[in-house]
Length: 156
Image 1 (cartoon, rainbow, N blue to C red):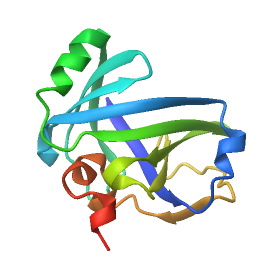
Image 2 (image 1 turned 180 degrees about the vertical axis):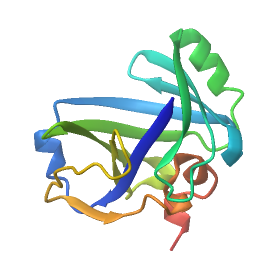
Image 3 (image 1 turned 90 degrees about the vertical axis):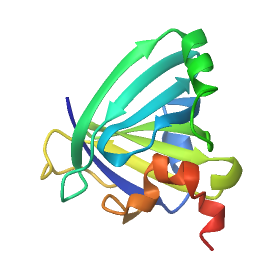
């Protein structure tokens, strides 16, 4: 139940041609406390409840527990979430043995495109596509829970 993930900014929309799947996502936070973040997500026509712990010192690993829940329950739980529901489309791109999940944000976070890759270890090597930009794994501003309260458009 440990998530090992690295995050990167995306420098172009070339990834869209390479995507094998895409889903619209709405997600909110019942708790955005970093030590016990509780997220409700609707991805396409499926609902999920996720609990994450604080990241380790590298920012790459943290506890994650996720369960699929009925869509209607996810819709009801979203109504209870803290202010700042995230709206984005997730594109999935296969690159070698890995899958990059690229999120294109809308609303108050429009203009932000970020890629994530899940790994089996913090030091695992992976192929980097041409559209992959600066790594932001250890920058808390790029966590969705932060973006829900401090939208990207307000950073400038």
